[in-house]
Amino acid sequence: MTATIALTGMLAGSLLTGSGSAQAAPVESASTAGDVSVAPDAASAVKAAKRSGHRVEVGSARTELTQLFANPTGGFTAEAAVMPQRTQRADGSWADIDLSLRRSAAGWTPAASVADVRFSAGGSGPAVVLSRAGKSLSLSWPTRLPKPTVSGEAATYADVLPGTDLVLRATRTGFTHVFVVRTAQAAAEPRLRELRFALGGNARITRSGDGRLSAVVGGQEIASAEPAVMWDSTVGSVASTSAGRASAPTGADPASGARSTDAAPGDRARVATVSADFLRRTPGPSPRRAAAHRR
Image (cartoon, rainbow, N blue to C red; front, side, top):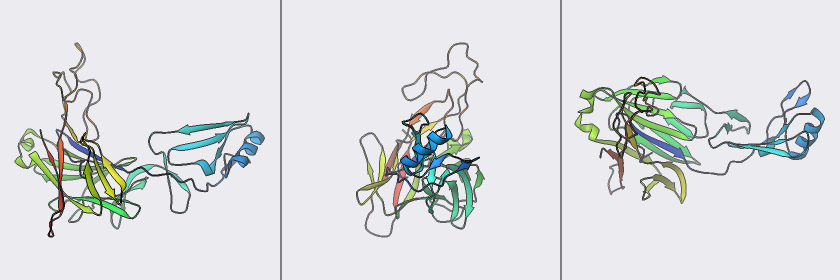
């Protein structure tokens, strides 16, 4: 989204779909050797659990985040996750989340996700489009994008600036976009000091006091973005800073611990916030733009 733009040693931003009520849908009953594992409603689940001797899911109570099971000894067990575990298909059935990108006529999309997100296949047009309930938000890079290299849930657009790649990554709740600055020479590029996306779609962008951005249509939040950050690829000991992480313990192996990637900072990476602004729509054909600035 708009506020998710950032600069990096890596520069990162993320966009999450807005909150909404998950609607349970009919779930097909699965059986193994005659034992039902999913029943359509609570009463059926209770009977099936007592008969089979194992717990049975209440299909009508299933959502993206929760499941409800009838226990064979009586009562129910509820299981909940903080991130979506499954998504509902158009036909009412459910599929486990699968963020692997698949090629479509419109670009690259996750195989199964709660977020309706599409990444560019290269060329002109939006780099990413996020849709929700018939409303949309898009980010467009100022120049034509190269064809991406796709691996798993990530699409990498090489050299959108000299020595700097743009990585779009599908997540369980939306997407992230990260600029990977590959060399010190690339980091000296003046255009890295202010990265701009053109904003499209019918969402209105608002910002809270803590830097969080929201995309709102008709009073409904369709997407949000936490404050943008940047991180480096430090693997050895680093001095503690107010914006970074604490130095490595004395005697620690500099090569140990997780290293920085385009998905997340490493254990010893220095992390800093990046300011993100958006320019409101003005009269005329000029698109809105979002910009990230290094502090």
